[in-house]
Length: 148
Length: 162
Image (spheres, one colour):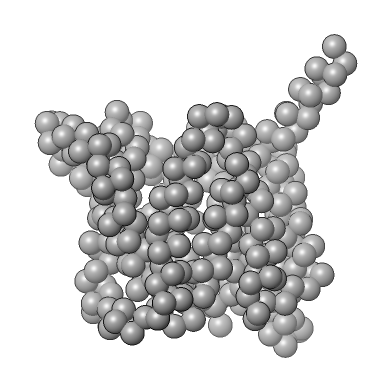
């Protein structure tokens, strides 16, 4: 719900008060403000005390989330969008739940998937593809091209 | 191009691993702090252009207010809530729930903002997606050893409110 609210607010602001500003700059400023807002929260909650005791694995996880899955992934994402278009690139997000399940199975010893979980991930993925509608349009257009 | 969903899927696993000892707010803070440290030098040009345009803009005050609202909603509240939930459920379940975002956004855009038209495909897909979430929620509840839970309790539990 919060992500939805964020997406709608961003859409609204980009069309009005933030129109014309570079999206990378807007994103980075939002991240900077978020870090600045979280600092007093983390300090008051005592979370800041967890940082000195962090081990190498935890630092790797933070660096992965902060650098690889954010900066690197979105840089590649933008390159792919330029090559194949935003519509086709956004369909890559459908693969994330299935890939997370697979990676969890191989990398997390605590995760043991069941047939119910596998069915759940599959049904959600099919539902997302249908709801998006672009896959259906793509198949319809492909069938039309084949007939011509 | 398949590297992108692989990198994003990895974020759920690394997040779940980090949350075994770190709190949700600490992980959220460190994530944005690290992104800033690496992102500022890499994206210095667009950042400088943005700040320059805002400095000369007559609506600079409103622009900063908009950025603050985005940071509170999309940064602080959204990420702390997400990490809080991720600490209490499995990474694949969290990834499925996050994957539902586009549907929620489309519904909100249709009903609230009225910027999109509702389609049959949207509603069919939504029903299927929720059926899948129910299957995942039931799996989680049964794995926790309580097969007698009602549907609402099941969903509630799977979202981490134990």
